[in-house]
Image 1 (cartoon, rainbow, N blue to C red):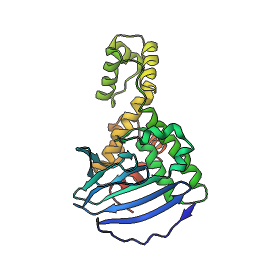
Image 2: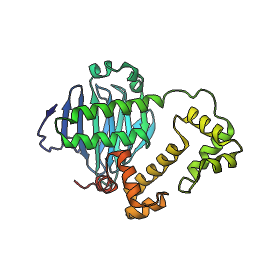
Image 3: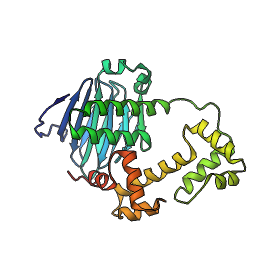
Image 4: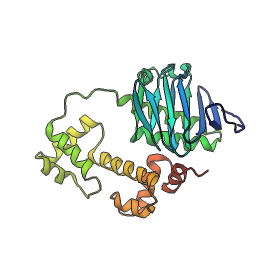
Length: 276
């Protein structure tokens, strides 16, 4: 691992480099973008991953405007043309550049960088936040932890590209929609199965086959993703958010949130609001 003392300096794009960590095959750069600034069409020579830590903006690619907001992750192929626009508050982000030789050691993840991927929440976003947290510690164990988290994150990203075995049956999509609409309720497997008209065991097996997770894990992720947005976008107390998300108390929520993101709710809120 190589650590560099980074002098804060602002370039022609009103972008300030706050920190940089160079590992074997990976470079992690934390940057701050001035409000209302723009970066014209450009490319990066290496495959790259960008995590938005706080603030908001848009990345423009192929005529699409993809929102950058706290927790959002963008994965890009090398030399893909894009531009960026930043909102009314500073945007702080983490960019990870991957050397080709590093990717060659795990060739099964190369498909992730064949074009452009956007993840607004879920496991990929949570793992990216954990990578950021570990990169700030900068001890002798950090390279191993960061590399392990990188492989796990790319594994989730790669899995998202795999086509479903068949189109989900209508009742399964109804069950999924029910979870999205009532994720804060105290739902159980039997109740969901009864509502969509199947046996609970059949629901559990079919759900995991199509969505690669259990019903309970999917429901918990919905709650954590919703709570992540509320921590970033509101001033509601952590206890209020925990209870509104369906957790039985703040302690339970905080424990699961740290498992999910590597940060406590208070640490994530401070980060998303721009506190150093």
